[in-house]
Image (cartoon, helix red, strand yellow):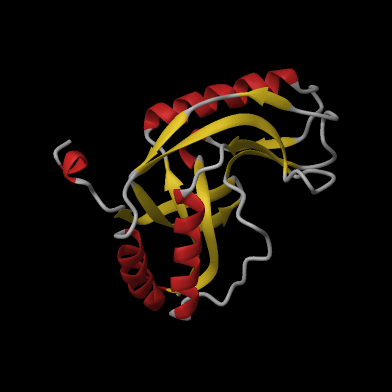
Length: 193
């Protein structure tokens, strides 16, 4: 059996609540005829890598590689900066997203994961675009509902793990199932908490 698999950072309930509140506020500022599929609170995450359709037999190898790779990375903080239309260079934009501030650890983690997974021949999918850390809040179904959207929104997110997630399309949107949660390298201080 094959499953659509991606790696992501999932959020604690408190962060999801803040993001869901921000989605409501942004939705109220846009025209009533805006056709946007807003992401449900339970589905909010930050995608690191989309691996495409994988055989179930590849998953154990994927878990092993992800565990080995993440052992080199201690937990770190991400900070958001603003809600905007994205991607920036694409017109018309297709997303409402929460942009993240630059962070040194996240791109290194994504690059290492991508290289290790490619080297192991688990996924043949090639990333065509540069990694732009963001949280998708909504998908625009037609033309953008406004010329510009910029709303300052700052939230700090502690990254302690990455998740291997299966995505199953349904009539009501995608259903996400966390298959494995892989901890980053714990420091002695964090091991105690």
